[in-house]
Length: 319
Length: 319
Image (cartoon, rainbow over all chains, first blue to last red; front, side, top):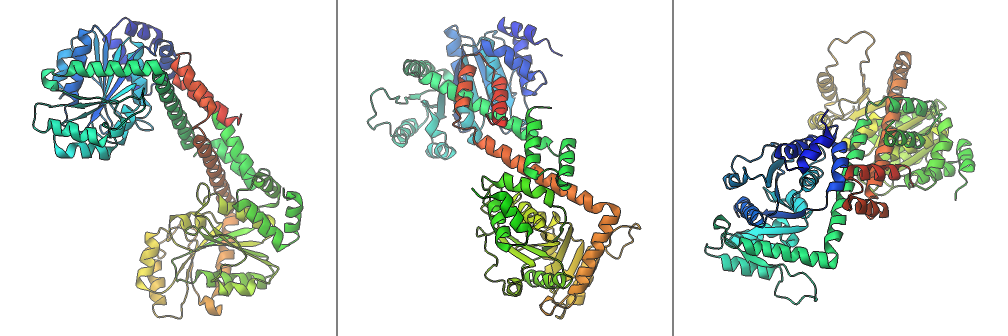
């Protein structure tokens, strides 16, 4: 058994191995998962969670790394969670191919974690939010959640953030691809990366048009900005941070941030509840209680509905 | 509100309208469904349930009608449940196209009911067994459950019977079609109908080969018989009844009948429990309790797992 309170204390003190260990406990659905989550709860709520999504090749990893650098210059502690819903391989501090991230690997103010969610019980839905809670409780000021692929899972993860960043790069098909994947709707901030390439302005215009950003909006509505960057050279990154902070301030002023967090928490609780009920349903088969109830249905002393009630009752009482 | 005890009493006395009304209450998932099932439970267990399945065109309806006549000659009360999982139209005493059945329509010793299950909550799985319970409680000695189509749903319904009859008719493709649909494995008795046509012997041989009926079996094992019939002329029907009664006696001697009924009841209870839990999961969204729990997760006074526990607890207590 892991000494959870000690581990949480070490994570609060900024020890990367304690943070990594806590995320592993969460990922592995350890028997101590509930103890970990209960210990973390009072420590959460301080982090600003930013989701980054976009088609492969737009430079998500490079952009994430540039954002880490920018926030570090501001003295913030930063957590990075790179979620890959298509891979069964989790863990470590670094993905093998994330060369750009390696510059932050030795920085004690940065936690980097890759998480594969394909093999997870009940899908990825519950795992990523729990890892975010660990990073939050460990004192990260900003958590960047980068999804590796593009699809419904990525959209779901990104839309659970406080602020969602959608990345694009020049190229005709890109905007359409993003639109198909359903990620265009979720952006609070849009980034056209690789802005030194031909077609960057065209992509920004196309995006502006697709989002109807030129149209009139009600006063006080958020108008998602489009920021051009060359993340590999760090160009435009400060403007992205500025856009993020503006969105955050806008959300705080209007109570949108707490609304989003309540919705996110409701979704999280619902997902855990559904997963728990499904597991219990799966456990029904081969249950001795079920056999005993079936016996009573056969001899006519119990009807099947009353038997089902007893079964559900027994399941949910955990007896 | 329906006077359930009075209705059950009338059904016991053999009034067809009371039987029909009870089945309608069951089919429509009436709020009184549970009251009906509780009232029926002590009255069930007397009926012998025979499932009939086979590809379209093999003469299921004609064979069912011939079996009804044979059992009526023996003085038995007979219930017929024709289940069509692909149709949303239920009800009445007769399917429009079941001309052969109409000869039994005025016989007070026969209940005929067609049941469409496509539109049913949670699929057909729970509806047919409940209708069988009504017919059982109403005093039917034999219940013939005929499935209209051929597919996984039909296999499931047929395999829930005490004895499963698989029907075939001459024609090369037929055995293969049946094998594909998975109905070959479930037969306790096989019937090659339309045996006056060319190829009947070949179909019987093919079936014998596919089932490995020529191979040695352990003493006491059931060896499914293959009976040839011309149902439209009533030829071979007595032999089918004989095969059914032999199978029933074999099952009773070895305790197989009560085993099957326990399995059937367990399946039934499980299906009802799963349906109930799924409905509750669906009710989660928009629940005010969920919103209140989410609020506590956001302010850190509760972790999401503890919140999910409270939610599940609340759901299953029905509070």
